[in-house]
Length: 98
Image 1: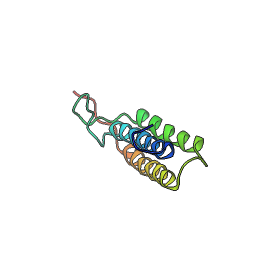
Image 2 (image 1 turned 60 degrees about the vertical axis):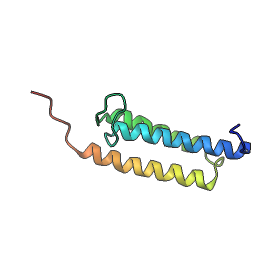
Image 3 (image 1 turned 180 degrees about the vertical axis):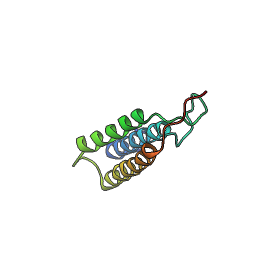
Image 4 (image 1 turned 90 degrees about the horizontal axis):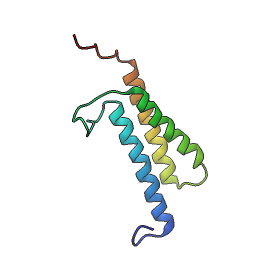
């Protein structure tokens, strides 16, 4: 348990951290955030889709077991990532180096 928090609040905090973790991974894969390993923005749409799909699965599996705050957060994150994914998928692929 997180020091000083009830088990329920600690679990809510962990859930929120997990959602933000997958959001950050997806944003890196979408090229919206710099990849900390390469210090470059790189697009990997299949990885981004996998992260979004994982969040959708987490939402489905946790249905009825999360607070309103947690539900609103995961809904908003999935919506935001879905819109960003659609935006990136509509862009032409980067031309290969010559």
